[in-house]
Amino acid sequence: MSVKFEKETIKTTTGAAASAAAGVAGEKGDFVHEVGQALTKGAGPNGYLAAYLKQLQKNPLRTKMLTSGTLSGLQEFLASWIAHDRSKSGHYFTSRVPKMAIYGAFISAPIGHVLITILQKLFRGRTSLKAKILQILVSNLIVSPIQNTIYLVSMAIIAGARTFHQVKATVKAGFMPVMKVSWVVSPISLAFAQKFLPEHTWVPFFNIIGFIIGTYINSHTKKKRLAALRRKHYGDSSGRGPSGRPGDDFDRRPSQGPGGYDTKGPGGYDTKGPGAYDPKGPGGYDTKGPGGYDPKGPGGYDTKGPGVYDPKGPAGYDTKGGY
Image (tube, rainbow, N blue to C red; front, side, top):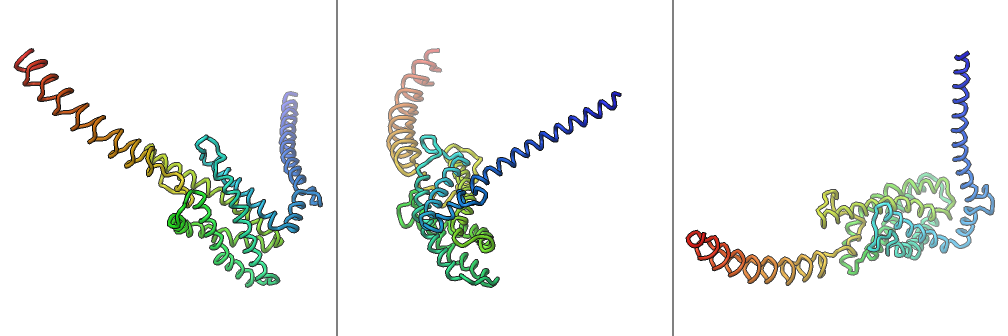
C-alpha cells in the first residue's frame, strides 16, 4: 500500500515538474513568437520589417543614412556602457555619441551606398563561382581600404586630432589592424549576402555586422585604454599597455598643458616652475634657500649656527656647555 502510494506520488511530482518546464518553455516560445510577429506581422505587408524594406527600396539613401546614424551612435553608447567609460559628469552618453551618429549618417552611409552600388553594377547578372570570388576580392582589396581609411580619418578628428600629422599618424597606426578584421569578416558576410539577400538589403546587413563587431572592438579597446590610464596616473598594474581605438588619446592628454600633472608648466607637480615641490626655488622643501629644512642657514635644525641642537655651541644639548 505504501509502495503504491510512493509510486503515485513520484509520478504525480514528475508530471507536475514536466508540466511546469513545458509551461516555461511555452512562455519563452510565445515571447519569441510575439517578437517575430511584431516585426513581420506574419510576413504580411503591415509588419515593421516589410515597412522598412519598402522604404529601403523607395528612399534607399535616406533609409541607409537613418540606419547607419542610429547604429553608430548606439554602438558608441553601448561600448561606453560595457567598458564603464563615463564622461566627466559621470554619464555614458558622452559627446562622442552624437558625433558618431553624424559620422554614420552623413559620411559612412553615403560612401557605403555609392561603393556598394558600383560593386553591384559591375557584377550584376554574373552568377558564376568565378564572378562571386572576383567580387569578394574587389570588395576586400578596393572597397574596404577606401571605407576603412575614411573611417580612421573620421575617428581621429572625432577624438580630437586637428593637424595633418596627427591624422596621418592615426591612419598609419590603425590601417592594418582594421584591414585584418575586414579581411576576416567581409568575405563571410559578402558570401552570405550573395547567397541569401536581395541587393537592396546589403548595406543595412553590412551595417548590422559592423555594429556587432564594432561594439565589441570599441568596448575592448576602451577597457584597455582605461587600464593604461589607471596604470599611468595611479600606479595600477592591471593595465597591459596603452592601446585603444586609433585616435582615442588626442582628447585625453592632460600632461602637456599647465595644470594637471604638468611636469614643465606652472601648477600641479611642477619640478621647474614656481609653486609646488620645487627642490631649488624658495618655499617648500628648499635645501639651499631660506626657509624650511636649511642645513646651513640659521633656524631649524642648524648644525653650526647658534640655537637648536648645536653639539659645540652654547645652549641646549651642548656637550661642553649646559647639560
